[in-house]
Length: 415
Ligand code: HAM
View 1 (cartoon, rainbow, N blue to C red):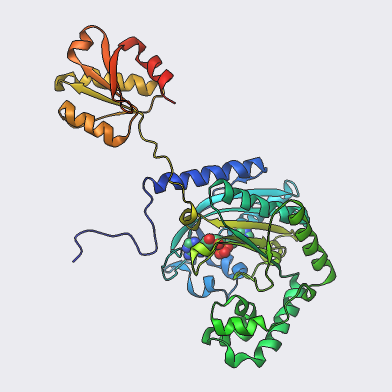
View 2 (view 1 turned 180 degrees about the vertical axis):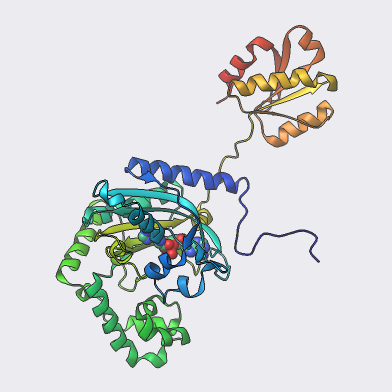
């Protein structure tokens, strides 16, 4: 029998400094989204199963293998945000307010994966979805924004991989082209891909098996698979990326594992992440609003995987604890010491005290462990003169301060 409970496999506990890093990443992303005119939305973790089956796709890995279902109810823990935001957009008829909307979200997602490094059952997305424009400027801007978030959070050495799947008709033609080409080399494909040739041939393109990679490298994949209008859109996106100094790798094998994508698709990858190398991804989904029962409205978005970003951030965050510790001696002076603490907090000075009855030496040791800048020592003798001792913990110096001046002195000396 277990002596204590452990966390569920594939989940993470966030505590300092990791919880601080998580918050920093979310804050920096939120600030950048707002600079680019996005509004924050907070949607439920529970959604109806159909929302994802109809959008992510019946044959996608997410729907086939990774859904966390609430038994006996047609409800699942959301595996991603895009389909959900579209559900919300249609249900609330947001498109009636104006023809253009930009939303961002930060929250947990759930996929029943076999856990490994960078592959969790509960993870977090920082994502955005934009509705109402086909402009290639928007494709460029969305990609640039994702890059800026990654950079501002200290995620380095990221490669942007980019492709275009074209419109619905292009995707159909491309699928047929792949079925024709892959049928001939079926014997050389891995067991999973043999089964995918007819059901989901696009997924053969991003299979990691060497044998499949060899077959794929022999295929003639070019932008010529796209119709004139989709090719022109993609060429314009590529030229805008160049114009705005966003380096990219055109990768015609990039297809993404979710069915709703059309036209531009992209991924941010890092070799440091190992097999699961994407720390973010996105693309256009011009038909999804219509396919989920809404009007014909083009859209684009991306989601960054916060835990994978955190694996790539080298700099440790500053652990911000209370800045001032209030110590006291003797023990019966505690009520006066607590009053001092209270007045510091009322004046917005982050401060703390020991709730357990400890000798002064141990209180000072605790202050050191907490990493505070100053310790205020409330002593009986000093208090008689309306004074306290203020100890600078960084410089190991101390001096007497008038009780009435304490807040002002601390405010002046705390950065
Ligand atoms: P996705 O590629 O499935 O796209 O997920 C985006 C990112 O989430 C991945 O690049 C990865 O960093 C992270 N991620 C995915 N699965 C896991 C996992 N099991 N453990 C840890 N991190 C994971 C989407 O979900 C789309 N909704 C993105 C999008 C938004 N497209 C348009 N708008």
